[in-house]
Amino acid sequence: MDIIQSTNEAVSLLKQLIATPSVSRDEKAAADIVENYLQSQGCTPERQGNNVWAKSTHFNTESPAILLNAHIDTVKPVSGWTHDPFTPSLEGDKLYGLGANDCGGGLMALLQVFLLLRDHHPNLIYLASCEEEVSGREGIESVLPLLPPIDFAIVGEPTGMQPAIAEKGLMVVDAVAKGVSGHAARDEGLNAIYEAIEDIRRIQQSHLNRQSDLLGPVKMTVTMISAGTQHNVIPDECRFTIDIRSNECYTNEEIFAMLQQHLKSELTARSFRLNSSSISPSHPFVKKCVARGMVPFGSPTLSDQALMPFPSLKLGPGESRRSHTADEYICISEIEDAIRTYYELLE
Image (cartoon, rainbow, N blue to C red; front, side):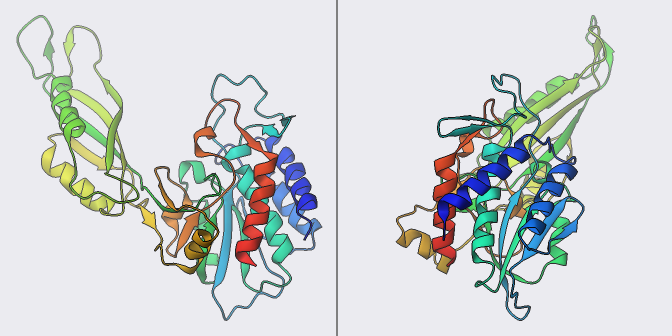
């Protein structure tokens, strides 16, 4: 096993990906790069849309597989970059570029480990998936029915190479508070903004009883609000959006039913499918991580784990706090350490 060579390969390919814009739902060019690289390494990749995967050389269809997954898409670059987000820039140990940390480091480290193990580990599947940043239905959700049965998955999100054995779910709820229009100069109408304020205050003050040891309480935040047509008209409608981060103690349907019971506004959930996920601390892979001195924790951020109906955890190089920020970077030493750690855990 040549970790240095594998790291160099990972960094070289990651630079290509950084230089190839791959914002969610526009990942074709990035998927082409991964597919072509797998072919150049003697693999026979498969593809569904902009998702690319490959199986180990002597894949055994009679036994469940281990899935190595990370995503190729990125968010749009935020303002404030001092580097060109689409020009890979290596400064000392740091490689700057959009997607370097989220999730290029994990994507490339898992790819190199797959290549190192593919000939003597019979049941590995490497999957570079798309649309993770928008939880799109053309991403991993469209691929899972095409894969053999999965026993366990590693998701290469940036966790500082510590195992995230639980993560919060996500539900976005659109709310409409109703009022009655009237002239602002007279005491008439029913102001929908004031009706919305009452519901927003209830959300702000709400505390669901069931808390998670790893994930803490459910978090509900009003993040958008819109109302009114002009300054002298009492608005008869006020729209606002609620971002809800659930723990494993509640399903999204349960939380939505509670909101309907306590709020006056009309509510519409965009989706119920992104529930919280977790893996047992007694799972053999988790126990192996702990034996190496790694520390399991709960992650507040959502990933494609929410769509996996089998045991999984997040484990990847980089730090979550760097994601979606200006001057995002990954350290070369982090990629090297990730390749070594993945290899030793999976071997």
